[in-house]
Amino acid sequence: MHAPTILHCNRCGAPTRDTVPDGDTHVRAVCGTCGHIQYENPRTIVGTVPTWEGSVLLCRRAIEPRHGLWTLPAGFMELGESTEQGALRETQEEAGIDVALEGLYCVANVRPVSQVYLLYRARMLAPRWDPGPETLEAALFAPDAVPWDQLAFRTVRETLQRFFAEQRRGSFTLQTFDIE
Image: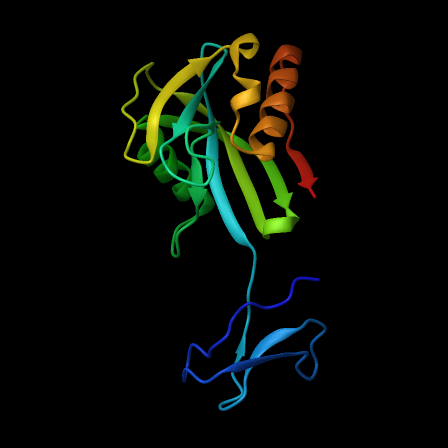
């Protein structure tokens, strides 16, 4: 069970205490002054597996964590946007490409860091890209040319392995998996 890390109330600023509120089943940060219960929930990561003629576009990270390693264009979902809007925004911000979404492909639970990934299959509309400031470079990789030892995250590795296996079979299914 994940212990709360909120030290001060976001309503009144007083210190919180970690306790299980009445009627709850989890430890929460509860304000000792005003009684406000503060919830910490998983972070949602949205992005795409962008393809062009059988190859996948990857981005080399210009930011931490994992600076210099390759990843799929993805990032934190923003308030007020749908998962599809977030995936398109992140793909544009990180890779500078326009894509057509072809359906949700992957739901990955990364429990140690309380993240949930939602990655969409995406068809690039043209073989052109213009990476943003969070990306050192972007490149298309055929299945046999992916820099497997230079991938930033286990989620990316697992997603690509599943994606290329399904691409060889000629059909895609929704992939769900946990990373412990």
